Image (cartoon, rainbow, N blue to C red; front, side, top):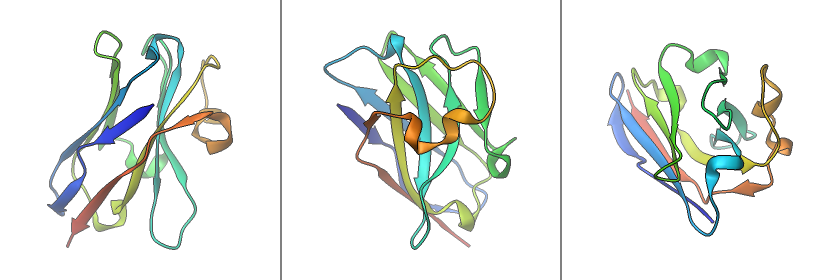
Length: 126
């Protein structure tokens, strides 16, 4: 089970840190991703990180503002979100898959993931 947390209401320009903790299995052997779904829109990939944390990819709209990281010892993946914009408002989901990620945007596709967290709402006010 994946449990996402850390969402909330923040003003534009502010920051939030999302966490996603796993229970019942270890994340060491999983590629991890963050997705988001805004009202009326499809779920989109935000970022992904390889098992070792060496390989990372961001969708263009968050590059330079968001940082994905993982702490395998804590069985947790994080998404640090800075300089938030109203268009970042969405429900954010974490996801995990045992496939190996090396490079590129393939793991920003939701079909790549077998396990999903329940989502945490991020609202950015203008």
